[in-house]
Image 1 (cartoon, rainbow, N blue to C red):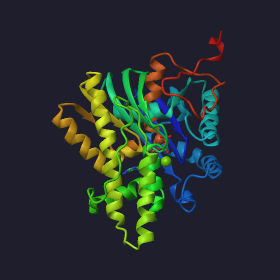
Image 2 (cartoon, rainbow, N blue to C red):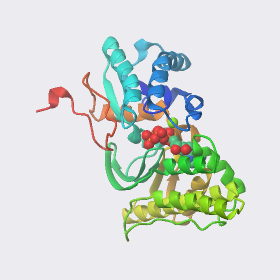
Image 3 (cartoon, protein in one colour):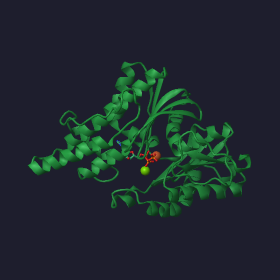
Image 4 (cartoon, rainbow, N blue to C red):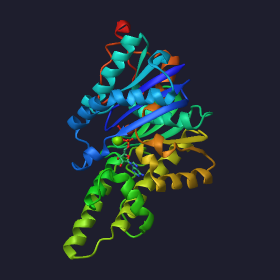
Length: 344
Ligand code: ATP
Ligand code: MG
Ligand code: FE
């Protein structure tokens, strides 16, 4: 079964071709980062326009790389949320046009679910149940994945997402966009114990997250140092900030894994590309004898292969969509599209 998958929820236009869900024949990612850099973040309207310009070329390239034609496609998967509405609509309209003309089923995929499924591509034997930490630009979710498509959200951020905190702190110390990879690099040469930034654990037993206090604390530190004329070490600020994020993410994930008695921990999303976070997870998983699944860097950040994998499992579990599929900017994890014909 050949899946064509489209992803356009934010600032990457991506198209992938997969065989039977877990085998990636091609995964083309056209990033708009350079376009948005000068604005210090993603400009939604600019992103949508660029997706329109790019998407046909990216589809052609993905098919060419997979050595297949439109006639070979069996199902079409597309991200329909969460994300920027205008950006989502580009992938969605294209997917609908393809599904209609090729007379093939269309499957609406949740982008966050896609991030989790990146792990199914990398680890061919991975099966639920497991605990998954999804840390991306817009989300921080701690999830118990019981079965394919079945999630219990154990905790999420009450304010900033982890990736958002990285991006904002990077901006504050005068680095470019996106901030995550730059903070990661600086941290390698900085001292993570130089500054004692707060770790926010919230109420006893809570698996929620909060990063805005940490972000304010970094901003206060920078302002105070400037006022007092104390030189700032960007490397130390980056490393100390990063460690504060890592400690809370890893601690809460370990607590969840113990509580739900799983033997496997999975991490996903753009921030899962962070080298410090990967290292700390490896150390702690090893110490507590959990199996740890970490996607390769290319599958952590946005890509269509992960969407294609999720589409495949939705399809075999009976979740196809129809031409009424629309973009849902705040789509919740585990929420499934109900076909109009099935609405009672
Ligand atoms: P969402 O998936 O929540 O809709 P998104 O798709 O924009 O948001 P991703 O593409 O999953 O987010 O991840 C992008 C985020 O990951 C950015 O905030 C970026 O700074 C962060 N990021 C990427 N690489 C790293 C890294 N090495 N260390 C820390 N953060 C990183
Ligand atoms: Mg992106
Ligand atoms: Fe994402």
